[in-house]
Length: 191
Image (cartoon, rainbow, N blue to C red):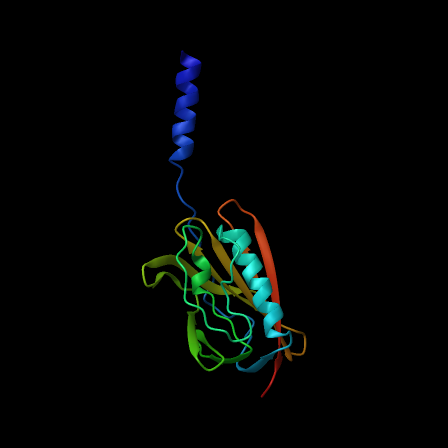
């Protein structure tokens, strides 16, 4: 009987474990890195959209359907019982990045502007979807992490090539079961 009670106690405590919480990232841009400028995607848009769709399906528990529009087609957002952290992800063929001492503003195809404040740690919302967002510096790289309530996490890492002419955006989609899918985009400076 004691073994059964101990086993039930362990299972109960395991079920009551706290949800993951993202740790704040440094706000100081110690290296002086600047991503400011105009950037044009080097990969074909349709190829990236297919990779993003696959990554979202595999990590969000989504049925096999299109989530990111292919080649500028417009689709109505669909409800999901799976992970929803991906709804905060923006993408575009052309990026205009403005950088201040306090944050980065990224315009995706001149239609959506995302603001990432250095060292931010806040709750963001889109409709009724809520997630924790942290962003800040990791050496020369800028990292943005978004964690949904059900444990899906989207991490974005922005980095520059040695001469600053290529911007790399590495996006890691992680399911609540810790399965990861990585999508990498590259952009050439277009100033």
